[in-house]
Image (tube, rainbow, N blue to C red; front, side):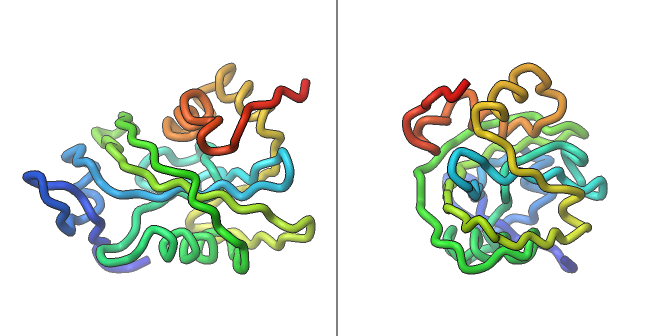
Length: 179
């Protein structure tokens, strides 16, 4: 994507358009979205491309990004599913909001108010990752993902670890262990 992306961030108590990198350098609280595409108990995760300016090579949820200034959260979720993974036609369900603050390395801080969406995928869902965004994808059982993110946290983004550790039931419903 070319050009400077302006995202909604709070400055002096007001929501304003601020350049994305400046938001992360200053650790400003800002709007974001996260999407979890499910197939029963499995979730589609993505490994971030090595060219990403923070957390490259780490596993994250299906899609996580920031809306453009003036873009709705739902529009942003649909747009980024298509841009990052070539996914279209899913029925998104809003699963609530999560706020977190995390150091993502390189002097950058994510302080996000995230609108979370889930969607159920058909068995034949086609995934076509944009290699500038995503280096690989995987379907993984939700319980296995939660365990692995605790045992090997260095493989996962801070926000995915936080969603699984602190907000799992709010996002995915009652936790049912399927050992």
